[in-house]
Image (tube, rainbow, N blue to C red; front, top):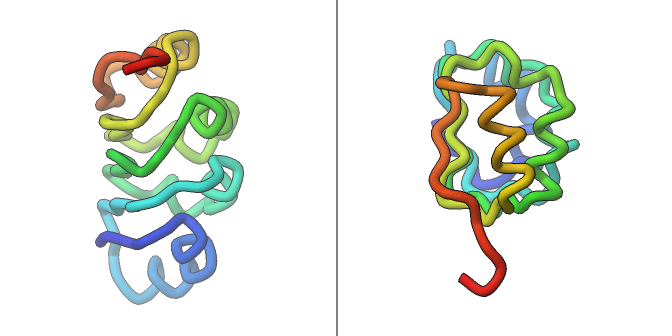
Length: 108
């Protein structure tokens, strides 16, 4: 299932997860990692795709501190402007479960 924004996912999570046995979700736009982290139903997913969703280093840092994502087998953060220090922390925390490209450098 694809949802337009993290706000839509947050607002309708109870309905979506009861109405359908969701295994994979793709969010097109993430404006705050803390909002996403407050959707506990995400922990039930087999894959969460946030590719190209506008996740910067600050938002990615919020994802690092949340336990919501600890059990998701596949977390796709590719095609996002995440800087090198946070990029390394993500790789260290999520390991092989993480799909991510190279770190973003200022001026690219």
